[in-house]
Amino acid sequence: MSEGLPADTRWAKMTHPTAPPARAIGGVQAGCLAGAEELRLAGAGYQRMRPSRRRGFGHPALVREIETLSRRVHEATAGVLLIGDLSQARGGPTPSGHRSHQTGIDADIWFWMPAFARDRALTTRERETLTAPSFVPVRSDLPWQVLKLAAEIDSVDRIFVHAAIKRQLCQLSLRIRSPEDFRWLQKIRPWWGHHDHFHLRLKCPADSPRCVPQAPVPAGEGCDRTLAWWFTEEARSDAEKQKTLARERVRLPPECEQVIP
Image (cartoon, rainbow, N blue to C red):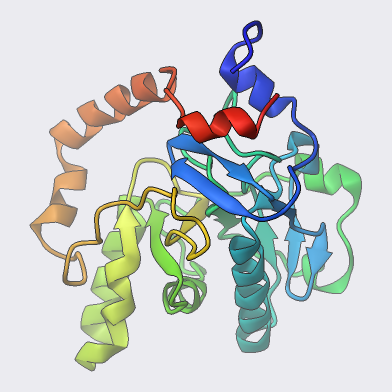
């Protein structure tokens, strides 16, 4: 890679993707993206937020699944999803906000689905200034049906939410039961933050042999002692460690040298 600007700044300055074919390269916390596609500002059942951040790019598989999920959500609830960050035009580290989102298979989707977004296009000002409200403590209008629809997409690997939201979903599963009804909870994983949005991550796309997959999601619904850990002092301490890790420079795969000048 060229010398000069720090790596994260150089990736953020890329305004256009490379030409196809699309390839997710490396891991979500140390990788890049070739042949990205930009998610349109609005489509059936969704509107995109914060376009000035230039983080609306993804592997084409991610763009298709966001479009599919948005249509299904709109058909089921009449709601409109507000889509936050995907990746930068060529992926790579961001100067702020994320440790992952580097390979074009991650997307942030707000829990809040305001009624006015159903009726009109958001203004530029609204896209840049509206703030996603927290759903922790867990609100009665948490759109758990949206999480279910997302988790039931085969190509979705996992979905990150605040631990309190995962716990609420586990409690809901005990009240609404046949056992198969909540198998989708396996993909819903607790993680720090994620109180105002969920973080959707795809499996490595079939056309991306250099994409590094995560370890498989553990078996079961995840409503056991592993969830209880998230409410311990140890978990709160680990949250501070995560902030430190997010600031560390990462070494990217050699293939990323072909993606950025």
